[in-house]
Amino acid sequence: MSARMSTGRTVAAHAVLLTYTLIALFPVFVIVINSFKSRKAIFADPLALPLPGNFDLIGYQTVMKQGDFFLYFQNSLIVTAASLFFVLLFGAMAAFALSEYRFRGNTLMGLYLALGIMIPIRLGTVAILEIMVASGLVNTLTALILVYTAQGLPLAVFILSEFMKSVSNDLKNAGRIDGLSEYRIFFSLVLPLVRPAMATVAVFTMIPIWNDLWFPLILAPSEEVKTVTLGAQVFIGQFVTNWNAVLAALSLAIVPVLVLYLIFSRQLIRGITAGAVK
Image (cartoon, rainbow, N blue to C red; front, side):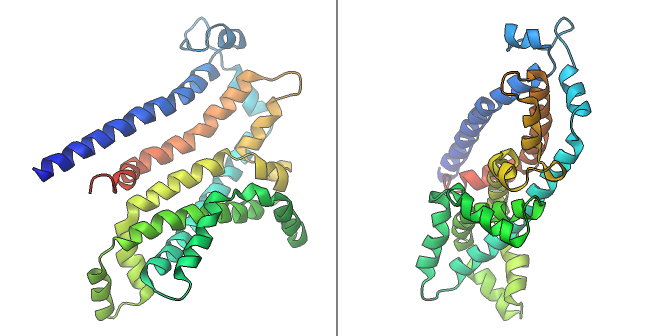
């Protein structure tokens, strides 16, 4: 009976997530179909599919000719991939330490790390800019990687620490009895068991980094280190906006996010629904 109830809850959770996913993807669908239409067709009927009568690739042609979009794309990939790596590595290590070891100030340390979720990092923009200027890191990808790593760590520690607590102590103690070091226990025994949580953190961390405009505009506005989001702003003017190019650039920028979601979708759903089906 309990197995049937658990299965029913899992199916219901999957159905709810699928519904929310379809709702969330609808704006993406609108952006993509309009990127293949003429300017007149975009404003005349934005929900119409791109057909032979309104099909136009002028937006993509403009993106490829104006600016170095592939360089912007490469910069965004480097910043996002490096930031995700450090967030997952340091976040998992900190979460393991907080959940595994009991020491004076353990709770306070956890609360201190959680403050980053409640206090936006953008409030410290002026101080961050001063630090980057003093360090000579302005207009470098390193500045963005450092900021995004600091931005993503609080959420990573908060989520992963809860999953770390659910890992069996008997398994970890058995590893210690077999002579495994704490690093081997962490990388070989604990991390494989919290992959759903890691995938959840990766998805929720990547999207704000990939779509961010604030810090690239302030810390790395030069042409050589522009990100995709900042590069798309060249098509937005004070009086005239090239909507075909903007929609084409946004459509291309959406691709990595969708690919990541498809890769980690199973782990993501398991991570989100883990506490709902116990």
